[in-house]
Image 1 (cartoon, rainbow, N blue to C red):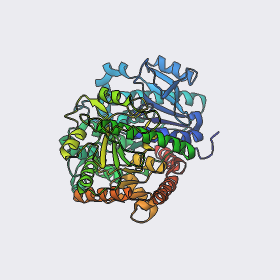
Image 2 (tube, rainbow, N blue to C red):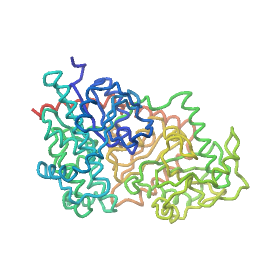
Image 3 (cartoon, rainbow, N blue to C red):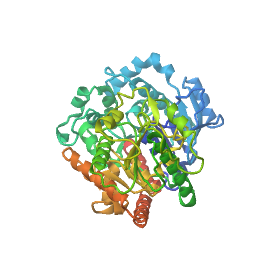
Image 4 (tube, rainbow, N blue to C red):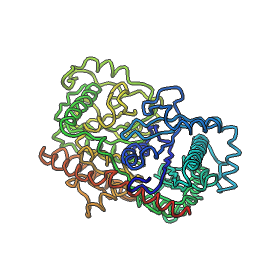
Length: 557
């Protein structure tokens, strides 16, 4: 018997980021899980890669009693899988599959995909093999599970939703070998669009002149693009996260999305009230102490903390813009308040800095460390040692910018080049705890199909800036109905290929303005931010997924 609003009997969601915290798709799936699980219960199964083997994965709660008949069938079919639950709100069922046993069959799989769907795997390299073999294994498991359910129930309805090109082979496998299942493909960014950006080409000025296949060949991403395009063209329902990315789907993949799936947020992930105040004080104290230890300074709790963060997509995320805005702010002087600007971006980390840890060991337990009189440390802006310090683009840009460091500066910079999981050795705060320390967040993206970081920011009541080139920024503009200002909780900065230095000036001015803000004005902006986030919850957005499943079933028949 179907639950209310449940358009299918079963849903299989396949992603490389299930129980694997890599980027924004992890946030999409882990925060929607509770709402979708409330609708589907144990008829919702997430499928991800088993990358930990015998090592413990804190995100995966193994349970051998879950779907044991399917586990037995999988063993018989040579599909190594572990069932359990995802350690996130909702605790949905998860299947983690290994795929190494498919490597001897790789060429046969690629041949089948070429002959059936025109997927060109000849130009593969890097993570292509792992992603495609995972997708194939995930598709095998989903088809097997559906066959099991079909044996118990006459023709149940089921949808497989594949996220990104890494899961394309799951969709294509099901399309060919279990056509009774409907399929949804969701691209969170296009391979060609991201590649154009990361290769420092102007995406928007010449957008209408770019051919997807031609650019994929020029940028050496033919195979990834080919898999992505095949999944998009053969899915029963094509989806993406924003109008921005939908333009790319039409231009590069040859198919417009049937339904848009904007990303929501689950409020159970955020803190409020006294809990928020306690976590915020602790996080601020930690960041200010680290900065003081590096610079021999004495920033107090009255300093303003601003931050930017995200995956290490330097140009896409606008980190260059942020750093240049800081330099402009520092050069113009006139700051009346100390500012600590934090960049939290995972890099190739070697270890926590031993010299910094030694100095931090001397800090008082209660208040912010006063490091006055201590010498400025070498590289006084970074918390961890890197394997590629001199090659890391973030580091090079900071050094080349001419930013000044030391106790006499009003503006200080802190680069945290590691995942914030609470155990990095220096900051030792989970990301959301770290985020609460900020008074203002800046996300000046150039390429951002959605943009979770600003949504997370306002969910915690932190005013932020994003750009018109982010899907979230466009959603804010549409929701508010006018050019969003910081008084709305989110400022949306118009950005294009021609106004880089104008944006630098605008960001510098916005930071200066926020530093002069009264406490009452900041609270008003914070309240506006939180109110805006109330309209971007998964309970409001999940219906788009249900519409996609309904359409996929209709098109599959």
